[in-house]
Amino acid sequence: MRTLYFTALTAIVFMMTITGCKTYHIYGNPKQCKAYKGDKIVCTFDKNGTTTPTSPQETACQTDTDCPASSACAQGYCRPLCRTEADCKGQSVDCSCTDNVCTPKKTTCENDRSCGAGMICEGKVCVKAECSADNTCNQGSICVQNRCKAGCRDNNDCGAEQACHSGKCIKSCRASCECAEGEVCHTDGYCQKAEAKVHTCQVDCECPSGQTCQSNGVCQ
Image (cartoon, rainbow, N blue to C red):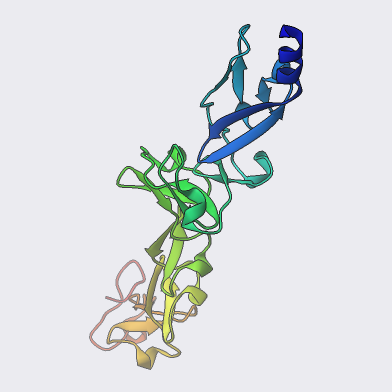
């Protein structure tokens, strides 16, 4: 009778574990109850034939390719995929369906490195990054460390009648007459302060009106 009991128990064992936000159901020989690739430790099995579910450490990741099937990399860990909020309900961790991935609603952090790919640390909580490239920000802003910041890298980042200079969008020009008094239009299309022109000379008549030729050969 005991042999029959253990034979039946060995044939099929229902084992359950929580990994991240998803419930996994594993079937198989209890002697194979061990750390499964991708899912970490599934359960423990003692000499009395007791199967004990465990809560394994989550699988760390950098990209989706580091995770098992039906999972994706979110906040630095493999998380189960989802379609609706209902797919993430009733789990050991309070999750929400964000970008089709069950993601913990609150994840504390100290800096961006504490969060996963596509996330940033704001107010010690991991949140979705504002941007991934300059073209994902509004015009007049660029993507700096996954955050949209006012600024530019070239004229294409600025609006109409603006030019990029020293990382800022400023009024553009096509000719010096469009600039304020004392400014000239730079070849890159923005107004800049006109540099005082230095007149060299040998005699006074070579200098502009009101200036004389100095001993160093410069009109003043």
